[in-house]
Every structure is written in C-alpha cells, then in structure tokens.
Amino acid sequence: MLEILSDYGLFLAKTLTFVIAVVVVVAAMASIGARSRRQARGHLEVEALHSEIQAMRESLQDNLLSARERKALVKARHKEKKIEAKRKDAAKKHRIFVLNFKGDIRASAVAGLREEITALLGQATNSDEVVVRLESPGGMVHSYGLAASQLDRIRKQGIPLTICVDKVAASGGYMMACVADRILAAPFAIIGSIGVVAQIPNFHRLLKKHDVDFELLTAGEHKRTLTIFGENTDSGREKFLEDLQETHEHFKDFIRQHRSGVDVDSVATGEIWLGTRALELGLVDEVMTSDEYLTAKLDETEIFELSYARKKSLPQKMGLAAEESADNLLVRWFDRLSGCRYFS
Image (cartoon, rainbow, N blue to C red):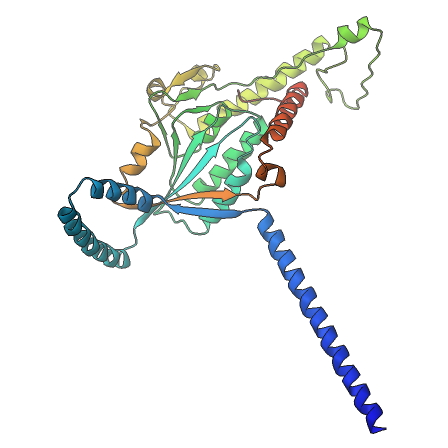
C-alpha cells in the first residue's frame, strides 16, 4: 500500500512539474509574441545632433594641430566639459527637436510624423522648439490636410514651431508649412503653387466605337460627376468644377487663418516662387537654409533629431524595391483615374 502511494505521489509530482514547465514555456512564448507585435510597428530613434556636429568639429580641429597642441587642447576640452556639465545641472538648456518630412503624392510620411509628434509632445515644453525640415511638391487634399493637422497639434500645445524649406514646399507642402510660427526658405527653394487640380481620362468614345456598353448606377444626384468609361455631361463637369473651386477656397481660407499678412488672392493663382521672391510676398519669414539655422543655435541649445523607424518587410530587406515602386505607380495611376483632387 505504501509503495502504491509512493508511486502515485511520484507520478503527481512528475505531472505537476510537466504542467508547470508547459505553462512557463507557453507564457514565455506569449510574452515574446506580444513583444514582437509591439515592436512590429516600429520604434523611435533619437540622435543628438549637437553632439555629432561638435564631434566632427573637434575631429577636424585635432587633425589640424600638432601632437603637443592636440594634447593641450584635449585637456582644455575636458575641463570645459566639466564646467558645462555643472552649468547644465544648474540651468536647463533650451532644446530643439528636429523632424524630417519628405512628402510624396499621398503624404505617406504622415504615418511616421504622427508617431514622432506624439512622442515629443510628452516631453517638449513651451521653452523648447520644434523644427520641421519639410520637402514636398504637394499631393492629395485629404492626405496633406491630415499632415497639416498633425503639425497643428504642436502649435496647440504652445510649443514654437519652425518650418525649414531647403528645396520645395509647394501646394499641399505649403499648406503644411503655413501652420508654423515661422517659415524659413533657402534662396532657391520652390514655394507656392496654391491651387487645386484634377484630371480624368475618358474612354467612352473608344468603348462606343467597339460596341461596348458601360452602365454606371448611382443613388444621389452628384454621387458621380465625371466618369472614366461613361459619357460625361455638362452638368457633371459643372459640378466637378464647383467642387474644385470649393476646395481651392478652403485652401485660401486656411492660409488666411495662419498667414494673416499675405494677400492670398494675389498669390493663390497656382504660381510658384523662389525663396527670395516668396519673402517679398510674405509667404516665408526669412531666407535661410536649415543647416544655417540649426548651427547658429548650437551654443545655446541641445538639438535632437527624431525619426520613427518602421519594421521593414522581407521584400524590402532583400532589396526588392522595384516591386514597391511599381505598386506606387499603379496606385498613383488609379488615384488619378478616380478623379481625386490634388494640391498641386
């Protein structure tokens, strides 16, 4: 009897040990899976630009000196850094957070921009500053409207916002820029293109020539104004133009709201201007490159560049960018055919 109980107890102990081991393994796998899912979206990368620029300057300086001069300079630097560290502890240094936005026709970069802004709003105060290096020729109305709204989150929290345009901020790109407290543009940066455009091919006559019927059924008088395959009407064209004009008026009102000193009616012609002329028109506040602006503030600020890095897919890792490019071209073609309105 005792032997049976002993065997039974040993069996229970083994079973319990096995069950606990399985639970631990399952819990570990679930934890790893949850962590990988959290990390799948991406992560925020922060680079101290002030440290990087200072390191490059010191490296150049070291290579221009003799061994004796270099040794003395290193000692002096070490002493200076100690003093600087104490000064930092005594008084908080002004910070600049740098974001980069390179826009395509769909403003795809807004996905990363929203994450970067969400992160910095949890740390930045109204004594800091956000600088956005913006480059965009414009694109879809709704996409760039969202991008401008993301930037407006910074303004609403009372944090100074500066937009730097080194190459181009036109159309939807300029709509984003005008949200800022200050707009800086390089001398030959392209600014403006305050207008709206849409274009749609029509294959109705081709289909009719080959005896192909096309039927489009809608509920609602203006559910579809112009079509790709059907026969377009004068009333449809009139409504389509009315929608374009209404979008343009919204665009102009948005600029009036954020750039009160601009004569909007005179600049909202779809024209573009270089940075120096844009300054005369009040479209920008100063002619200056982003590098010039940031390096001028190195001595008084700490500059941190934020970028949200998304996890790359396997095709991207393998360098199959051609497939992605082809997909982007097809999407752009379809969007154009669909009659989407564009700030460009």
